[in-house]
Image (cartoon, rainbow, N blue to C red; front, side, top):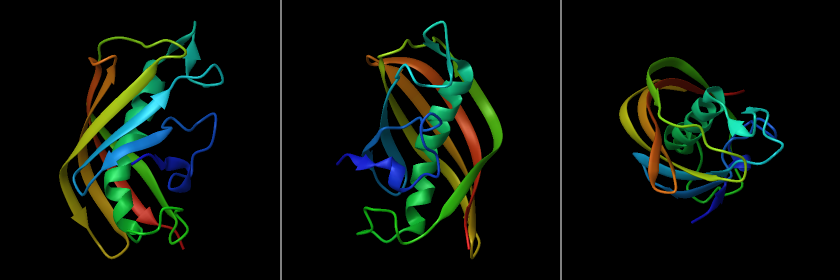
Length: 147
């Protein structure tokens, strides 16, 4: 499925922390990110804790964010949304990955409350490097449409 996430997130390099959406449905997402040398969250050629949280947040937000677009809008032109991490409920960082490694982040929707123009949600995410869990987190988001 490989969806170009740049069409749906306001982030751009070097803040863009997801390269592709591998799979997505109404309650889950799997995203991919290759850690490049231009990433601003590097320290001693390792992705920092902040970078890992930002990667998880960008992947997680795709679950709810997709509902603001039409199903056939693969270019992201039908709407503009913005999302905020409203709370970090839990983050466990087990290891820091290195430059040129690829991360796979999987997330599942836990809860969601919608109004006419925004969503408040809780999403659990897990990030893997070579099938090894390196991040486990639960984040709250506020996602809303931009005029």
